[in-house]
Amino acid sequence: SQWEAVTYHTLLYHHIAVQEAIKLDGEDVYRAVIMLIDMVGRPWLEGKDWQIPKWQLLQACPSEFNFTGSSKGFEGALGMSGIDGRFFLVALCEGNLCAQRPQALQPGHGRLVVMELDPGSGPSNAFVAGKMRRTSTCMWRTVKVVKLPIPYFRDYSDLAEHKGVLAVTSQENSAIFLGKMVLTKDGLLDPATFDVMSGDVFNFPPTSDCKVSYCNVEAIDFINDRLLVAGSDTMKAKGRQEYQCILKEASMHAFALPGKFHFKSLPDEDL
Image (cartoon, rainbow, N blue to C red; front, side):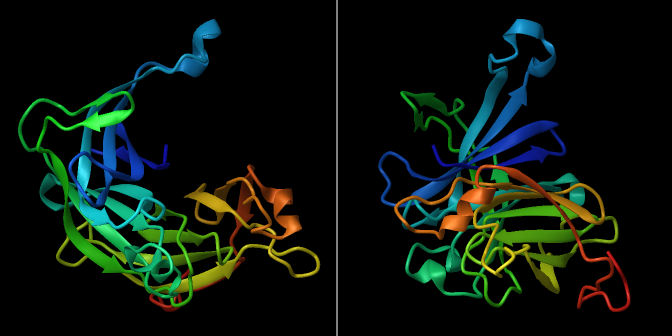
């Protein structure tokens, strides 16, 4: 459970899946489990066996960064090429201050956690009865924690990158932030200088009577410079959301950015 992010390893050409936050044996804290996955073949083109999962777990390593609970961990991740041939995983904390409730709902304290793999030693970790058995000392080490320049998001649900521009969505606010990342001239991540600059926040379209319509945006990505694709989770049960939220639940959406806008960090320059 708790699968909250999928990204791509740009150096090894494998996918990475992130389990949000689980308690490992012998520990009192919660850590993300980051898995390197090999997609075998193209199951959607292989006839009657297309429904059979065709993937292989190559590696599973916990994050050094830890949480105090399981409900608010990493909610999105980006695989990014770095300086000196290094690879970094940039993970988005779901809660403000990377905390659990109620601290998680204190607006304006979004965080990105930049990590790099320490391969460690020992046989590869494996899963037994759904739980990770640790036989390796491998770990995704925390390289840097970056504050997001978003003043009022109450939560953070996903992130995406396009031409050096970072997108971050919020379910609670039904909005998206767009801002430029500080990368090298070659578009690589340098931990010494990596940051996110001030940007713009756009609300997702409301209903005709100005109520929140897109209540559960859980995924975001760029199609091109002006188009984004989003995915919504199911509506929260037991009256925790207003009735109109059911109209956009469990579905995909395409959004066009305003015809002309400027990032505060990029004067007189469009995306």
